[in-house]
Length: 281
Image (cartoon, rainbow, N blue to C red; front, side, top):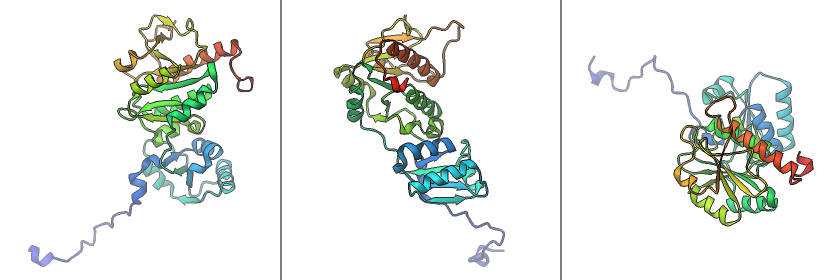
């Protein structure tokens, strides 16, 4: 058959392309998947949620709780096919519940700084030096929020952003811990140093143990990249470098676990010195 004779004909076997929702595909950072992440966001920053998606045909106590919270905050609910949600979140367990937010609202560094300084000697910020894995970033956010950190600073480039994977791992802790994104992390640390913060870096090669350092001062705890550790530009800005002793001889820890170990020691010393709010300990 010649091309001229086939012109205008339709292939009866051709499948009609599935329509796509343009905004959903182009702006995945608006998704907060998972029951705990959505519930904690509803409790902490419900105003950031524009709608909630729930998988069809799966009634449960969890679903009822989300429905009740959403209703109390006048947030619309839309029911989606389970297969549709699974297609959107191939590598993330959405648990049949997804929150849709505005673009993630990164905090302003100056506002976080002012809030932290109100705590005086107990001021505690964290900085993530090019943490590239979103899951690690989310886990660090949850760890920092658990131990009462006042904010987390991340660089704009070569760093994980607040993606669905990060929000899923944070499990709603992003509503309790402000996340600041800066153009230049080194410059931000310089500014914080001028404001009276001690810049403390964690490195495996440091001589000083976290248990021998006096944490009772306003400080920024800097945690490094999963493989490379702290970058040279950050290292030179640290007033002190500390390490976590390893009685078991293991070389390194996951970033959120390492952060938890250090933050636990910080809280222990500050509680012993009477610097922590009794209601929080």
